[in-house]
View 1 (cartoon, rainbow, N blue to C red):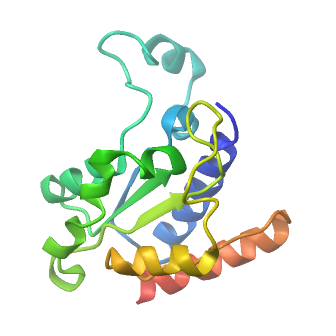
View 2 (view 1 turned 90 degrees about the vertical axis):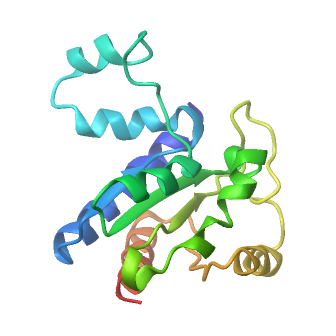
View 3 (view 1 turned 120 degrees about the horizontal axis):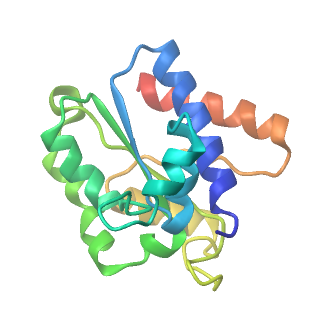
Length: 175
């Protein structure tokens, strides 16, 4: 599972905080490859149930893509659908189309589907990805071209990352 589960757990933790403190109606859609299992593990009270359902025919399919977040949003009565997008899937053809679906939604009346790119630098087979390797200014321009207003959170120090992520989510939720 590479470096995706720690990032997924980190994002899940911070979304739980902002959901509680701001009383948000939010659904979390995990997409970075097999990292979805990290989030599923957080939601199951018992590991036995997880092991019986995970990757079993008719059980949990491990992960859902960001493009599914857009579809879930239109079917659910949620105000916010937080879709986490991994580097590898961010470069797939189906997701290339999903980046533009925000043009069909008005956050003030329809709610919001903020993509949360998790750029750890590796796709599902531990190969380099483009988004994690382009210069920050170019990435900012790319995301703005998709109609997003990016807020970047980068670093390795856990304490600083917690502070920066909390501030970023507070900004995103209140704007």
